[in-house]
Image 1 (cartoon, rainbow, N blue to C red):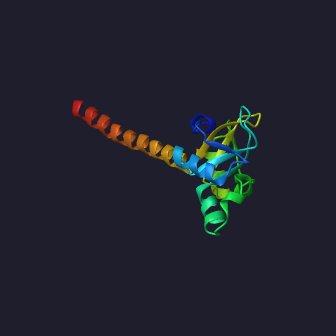
Image 2: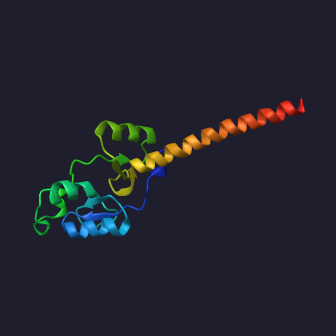
Image 3: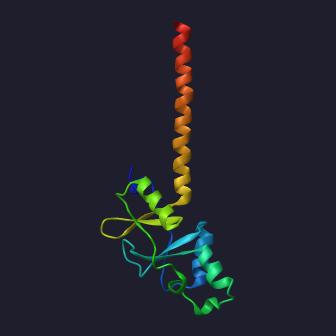
Length: 151
């Protein structure tokens, strides 16, 4: 299964020039913990970084920084990891673990943003897989009982 098949295609993004206040409002409005940062509004958007709620707290609020003087481009992580939409899910999860990141933008072959894959998405996927396995075990027991009852 490719990461492009399961990534969230509803990505909330912001411009590098956006204010911290505007970014925080987007996070609140869409109930997300990160924004993909793009240089300018083009279609498809091309990511240049990411900013998380943690970035805002650790880099700005904890340092009592003047948020009026700072843009998202000043606090974003420019060295973000990304995944190609044709990459395998498990390869992306392994890379997320190795790099210590909880979120990865998913890009089309041309570099345009097509989605985002998060640790929460990975947990949902694993929960579904485990549920399917549990159902298999249950169904196998049921089938065995039916077979032995008839014999």
